[in-house]
Length: 522
Image (cartoon, rainbow, N blue to C red; front, side, top):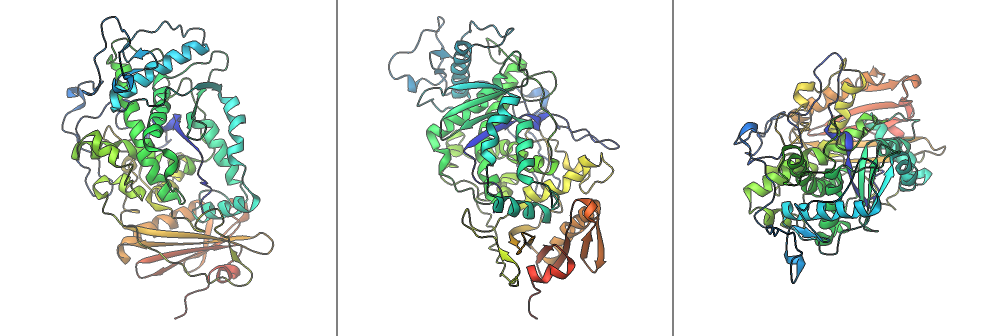
């Protein structure tokens, strides 16, 4: 049901790695630079807000560069004989530590991009132990303005779907009722994406923030080439990603795998792990791309977008360390996680089962559920989406409103930056969200969440009530709220609890709440 119709691209998000400054409170900054390669780390604790522990201190960690699977380049960098696909660490005519005759001071021409791409592919091979089967894909460099213009077609969705997406985000208090949420997604993407790999056209686009001198952050290039190699081996287009939670689970695997390699690649660039160095090391601004990206249009959407990048590397590291190395990681593609919870809490993979939440349609003749012609007809949000809506006020208010305390949201392990597993999400077991349309295009929504016990939903409801107050809602009767239209949320909202379930209903007015979803018969 989410506006997440499956985009045929996977991307690297620039601003993921920068500090998020919070006025009047602790900064939400990375615990350690995500560019640093993780050593063997113990499983995370299962307590809300728990952080990773590591078997070695940062000062004791050696720079992890090539895996033992990689071939050793000859002294003269002569091309290997025979089947070059068996030679891990050589791709497109270049070894992983072969010097390149490339001058980056005046920008890059097409032949220089080809050389950089080939060596980056060889380096990814040497780190990930997967060969480049079908050659290095073509790479195009666009300025950020060109990228914004070119990517607008990805968000060409019908008016009906836009209204449904607006209603789905409004019930989560992530986007105002009259705001075009599709446009917000487009603005976020244009501001924060550093590169994309299109697994239909098999093309890579790298975004440059300097239109006068197009350049490439080598680790971002490696990230997108990593996706191409993934696709060659595992077919990235095969996965069903029809709900928000399932999408984040699949992306936790896809982005986690490649971002884990990017972290190692970038650390080798920074700490001299590559014998011949890197042509475009990490920029000074702390971002992941060359130059700097602008702030997202919607912080809640931003935090839900970056979750797979944030938690995926720790998930991959857990599978690698507790299993049989890359062989166990490769097996994930045949049995991927089904919920973001398994990525955020990897010790629960593969045994966690999402509760099958059912929400009967109890709308009146005035309201009709949006159909499922483009998906299952409902969305499942999961704990990545819940945490995103609860952390957004901290950034928007400059630290004045903190549903999640910044220090609790900030992770301290070197594998992730933020901790999405909190008391407000710890008892989550499943959910379903439906949206409704009235005769004059009015919208409403019903979101039912399932919890491990009645006590487990209490922190979630308390946090949600704080969020209601922050967004301008006022309680008119017990757990029934109205919003001042000037708040941007021109709607009414009701929270209903029943055993281990919480159901939230929105409608244009208080009087129409039952028309969207009548109370269950006693």
